[in-house]
Length: 408
Image 1: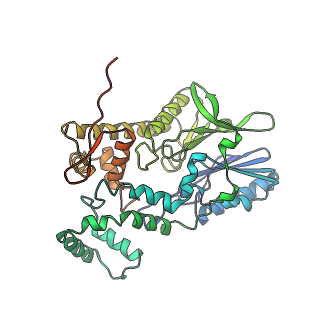
Image 2: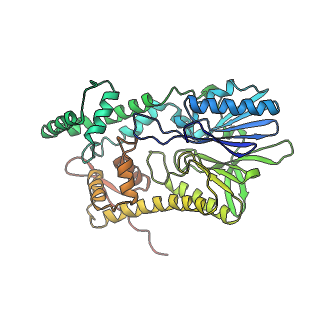
Image 3: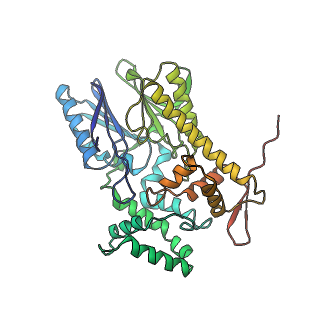
């Protein structure tokens, strides 16, 4: 399959396939999105980014309008990350008598892409050295540098020699200080032009406060978009695990849950709270057990819809990844009551990780493959959970395990 491929779930529900990148700078990470028609309304559940996904949205809208004119277009964004809202300006291209567009209020800061993500990466600078201990394959780095304008003849061997000289001169920490700006620049260059259509956005909260929503044996909060008969078309359910304000979408007619990015159960961003993503996964499992969910999909993992045991396995993996990451961090700290810097914690975890473990996977996926860094994820975890910290002799912050709560 390929980016923009249409997958028909039902005559009125379609998925637009995304894309998993091979590396950070050659191709962007694009999410799967959904389009749902309910009577006179056409719902867009995120819009992805780039021409393939844009063309797919417009093609679906054209087909839908040919069967019955679109009275109202409703664009629902799950959160504020650019890969989920890059084609939002289709709201002005799809013929409809009325159009509305919603986003979580807490997601709005992320719309200032460069400054928002730049600040997240820079948060790590006082705590650790970005490049120290990071495995950087010379061939991959050479490819990256060529993409950024280096001579087309630059080879991995050239980079290896340069890296050895940089290390000999002790320049790694100084160069590491430029990593946040570099990564943000690469991200913005990698993605196609992004059109978030900020002027058409309304906060979900403008519809009123999030209300209690009971689905099967689970309790959620959020907002409901209903048809003329008062029957729910789409439930927008609060999760806020992957990022601030993040929501998931449930289409009752097809017992379809679209998780967007709420399958990320490690804190790769400063506003992540994996505890919420895990809670969402557990609710979804309860709904599957009760027959309330038949189809499960996400923006990235799983990118295509799953049913039954496959859907359950995907949700269990979300939970297992988060819990095993937390356990690995805790186990790394236990032999070190004096505390660990993030650099030292990283070294311990990488050295002790087993093949296929959550830590090993995170190591393999970090820069330069993706834009994430395990050290930054570890910092986010320690700050989120309130690990006590102090300044060490070298000026770096030292974290310790929080004291265990008193037994009842």
